[in-house]
Image (cartoon, rainbow, N blue to C red):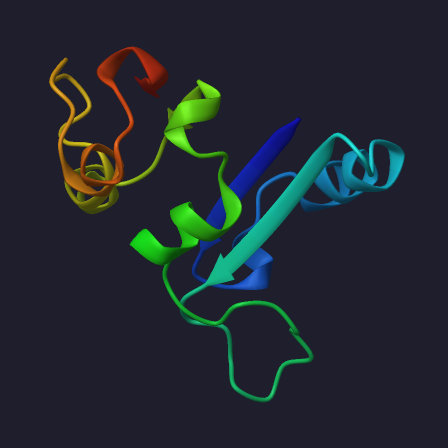
Length: 109
């Protein structure tokens, strides 16, 4: 199964939104997307998360380290710092390490 935690500022910023929603529809039992919008206007009809991703979201939505998943991380430098450590650093740090994921489970790109 694939779980995608996808953070953006607003709904308009979601790259590939239509195709991602098509995949969710076509592969309901295999592909799930959880959106996080940090600057979505309060009066918009958005019904999803209106905040940044956090450690608790990894625990809630991602498979636990014991299931030996692969975690792919892509985003701005601040997200790398919080979740896994700098992109070019082979060492794992941040939330993913604290939760118990191993360096071989996390791919930074």
